[in-house]
Amino acid sequence: MRQILAVAAGLAVLAASACSAPAPPRSDAPPVTPAGPAALPAPTGPHLVGSTALYLKDTSRPDPWNLDADARELKVTLWYPTEQRDGRRAPYMTPKESELLLKGTGIASAPYDTLSKTRTNAIEDAGPAGGKFPLVVLSPGFTKPMSTLTSLAEDLASRGYVVAGIDHAYESYATTFPDGRVAECLACDSDTDPGFGTGVVQGRAADVSFVLDQLPSKWGGSALIDRSRIAMAGQSIGGAAALAALVKDPRIRAGIDMDGTTYARIPKTGLSKPFLFMGTKQHIPGGPDNSWDRDWKLLTGWKRWLVLTGTEHTSFTDSPLLADALAIKPLPGTLPAARAAELTRTYVAAFLDQHLKSQRQPLLDVPSSRYPEAKFCPATCAQS
Image (cartoon, rainbow, N blue to C red; front, side, top):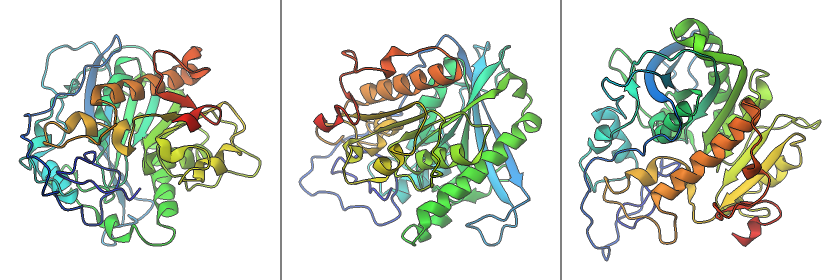
């Protein structure tokens, strides 16, 4: 979780956690010029995509990070199928959010408002399409706003899902509320404390349950949601939160952890809900992080454990897609940004199609010549 983004050294942009000081620029690294605003890749599904934001307040509990707040406030971004073609593109983030994120991760290689100019594909506040669609909850990595999973969210919406992405206030560098307040990362001061990870995932699981409670009454398009088909996915500690929420909330049928160390304890009787681990070589069996080894034994239902060669911690996010705009070189040996996005979108969608839409996906059963980077653990992933 506490991976640090190096600026000119070429470590991947927007790493999973950067609460400690970023590594200094390398003096021998050649200068790189920002390529201009980034454009997220087009969604691959048949539906056009709309997006809107909700702001929710849970008055039943205080905020775990802001001691002056007697309620937990959340921003939820929704992506969903629409038939509307025209309209303003949904913003990626505000200039202030971009500034705080770049400063927090130590990036000074591009103007601080650069990420606010990122071009998305969704139409802001578009009218929802007709029909019923499964719901996918997304949770980002620690210190990162929900916007860093936008490419995946847009793609899922285009494939026929409603996506609810949660900004867990005070756990990222910036979350803007409707009255203009900007919630900065208060949790960053605590991320070395014992039990920190466990506390975060428990809090996020509570956030998810509250969002599921509120969606029917707080969003005018909630009739789109088939509430019998709900899954959750997340990256880094957001992936750990997916497992925690799956254990806690019976409404969530399936879950995906993208390269996140897990903290939630699975009951000794096991967890029978479908689950997908998808990560980097750090998560090979017997590797540096043994949390997946521990939990794998307790997953008693459908399960897969994939390691993708050529990936690093942020390969499952928008970060590689933004690197050129920020004048950041990728790590040697890492997959091109477009390929990393394709792999993430493909395997996440395959899992959800199988378990929320009952569409069998042979891609999840055996290694594919089309996607040789995906190694199935424990059988073949040691080769990664």
